[in-house]
Length: 253
Image (cartoon, rainbow, N blue to C red; front, side, top):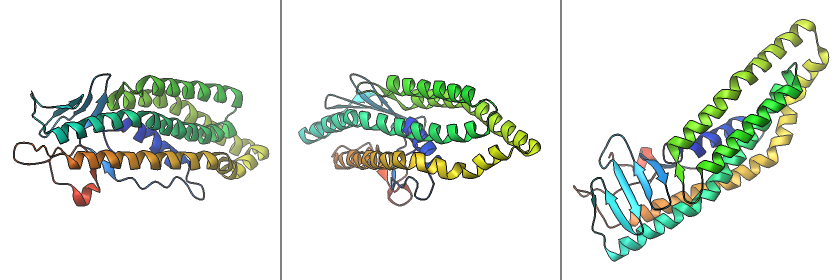
């Protein structure tokens, strides 16, 4: 997933990085898109900076392509309505995937930072604040009537950017102090940290995997609706809002 679900993809990537352990998060999801995706209370909107078309709007079974409302068959009007309903229905699951991934990322990051930090309580407080901020941004940005991949990606980037330098500083500073001071208890905690982190995040990784797999399958369902549309662009090409296995199945836009 590259653009259409950018915010969720970012958090899912965090979950995959920190949840490797013995099993990790295993999700086979080859759904991709050339478009940024926005949802509001009236429309489902796809936009991109290059390529034709650049803007596509679905609204109550109607379809707007670049500069005009196009004529659809009755069957296609039904498909567009179905696409709109399913896109909205996916949002709660997308929000849950984001929350699951954030939970894993901050749990693992927190355990590492606290293990190395000279002030574990302060580190936990800062991480908890950053986690609440991401949860709040997710709740505001992903709803049944509102979603913007650009907005969500920027919000997550700001929240993570605020906390990561602090955490890295705590980890590096604590490791250096432990090494030079011969703090054997802290060094021992560091040696056991990987197993402790795995034990804490494994159940959450399983939940993330289930939800991410369900999200991918539902996005594949959207792709099937997209593929079934009879409407064609000028030149005879399909809309191709989403596609599977882009390296194999995709025609260049």
